Length: 287
Image (cartoon, one colour):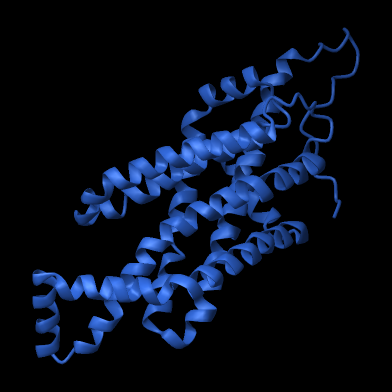
């Protein structure tokens, strides 16, 4: 528990580091460009297709007539954009996670290692290609779980539990691998996953709940069309910042756990000699 809380507060403090802020903006620029391009090409056809599907459905048509009778007929024009956004949001989340894993996480882990663990040996147990393959495989499993669990989302309590659990599991899988890829060997990575599975999964679940929060901005962007252009990029930036925080939390936790794992392997100090310095050093004030 001590290591979990210590890594949490360090991650919060590191979110204010200029390098972390700059890294959180880079995926935002790429994703906004992709979102604008896809929106320009497919937004109108997608909304029109969903609206036609709603009109063709007998039950949903009755709901529309009921809204019309209540004087809320304008809400019918809001439902289609909301559904399109609801379908697109998980895709945006997955793209953000992959962008963080490929672009941000290695740089953030390097920052943590430089400031806290400059003497920690790099045994390079995971390559960039292995990281991409691990991320894609984990994402595919998360998508399968997401699709299979969709019927359960109709049960009110489960819709608040299942998506964050899936995102948390995916975050745990991706971030742990990338946090240890440079410094840990394959055997060390497996040992840490075995010994610290529950705390790491807890970090992933908390990150999953944090990642679900910006969805409110997506819904607001659909309801207030005038603010859509501002709210959607803001939501994407919050997603990337949450993932940056997750990378920091996993980075601090995993590297500290790796330092603890190697500590018993360090040669003991000679009798009567000075005690060897710990592997985890205080933060070095670098920019």
